[in-house]
Image 1 (cartoon, helix red, strand yellow):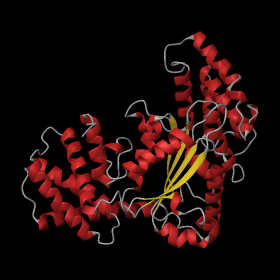
Image 2 (cartoon, rainbow, N blue to C red):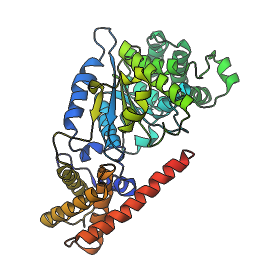
Image 3 (cartoon, rainbow, N blue to C red):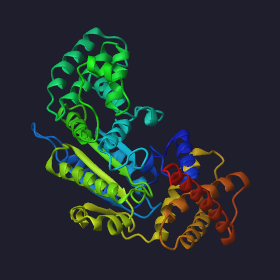
Image 4 (tube, rainbow, N blue to C red):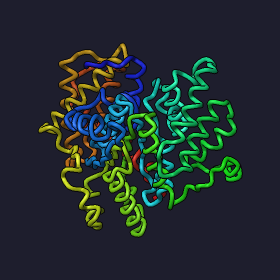
Length: 434
């Protein structure tokens, strides 16, 4: 492997794969197989070209649908794109859609979900979770622009330079919502001047969380976040990020929960469709400058949902869709084998006593891959099932020694993993209120 992770990173990756079959929040590129052409194209044509600002002109915006059956790589793809975006100085917001956290029929909740998940490139592995949220991102970007003004040793001259920039350049950045811009300006000034109470009050407002209305009025912040203003706040966030040059732009990564749309009433589905159209149209018209919107959905989205809304269906043409079901002409069995081999390398980096017999490992992997295919004849969840099953097999080899797996032993491993993944999926549905 070109980029072998350190032991701790490798261990985190294996733990994530073992528990849920989900890719890690950081390090997904180490596991990537078959989607390189898609990722390189999005990087080259969008992140490095269309979305970039040039000679005082805004960058463009774009929307793409990421299509695959449940458990076949949508989240993995989004995590890889998140890492690509970070490497090019974009902010990213990875949002898991659900009725509780981010219902598509509520613009204010959509903005709040983005504001709470947005982040710049994590400075450390631990910061992948701690570094989320608009207030953290703003601090990190200002700190980077002015050489550690918030995180380094006190430097009055540097602090004065940052204050002048915030009060002049940032405060003059053109955005739709002057109230949103004022909140960002006052938040950063409060951080620079050490006013933690003021900063905390404004942070709640910027994150879309319940806030002290009286305290905000005292700061001359009167614009309320609600259904009518939610998308205006979202557009203003993206406008401010690129036009202030705090970052290259914004990448919005929406991961469709397994049943989130089907849990909606028909009225809510109609509103959700209209909201999706709003985001797509505003991206295409340039009102979300420097913004790439990637929305991961299952195939049923196009056959059971989009078909009911002609305007949305028109925006789901072949040029807008990236289908992960058939990757670069690879047969599914070969793809599973390649994924398993990458997992083996990471497992060996994580544990000193990991099995090392390459030939026997490949033979056992082939056996597990074949059984995974047989258990998922409809193609749904095959890759996730293979990932978790192969990790479990490697753990058994590590604990008890490696041997030739029989088809029956592979089936037993896969059945145990299948029950585990079904329990995780059932819990997710239960959490969404079904």
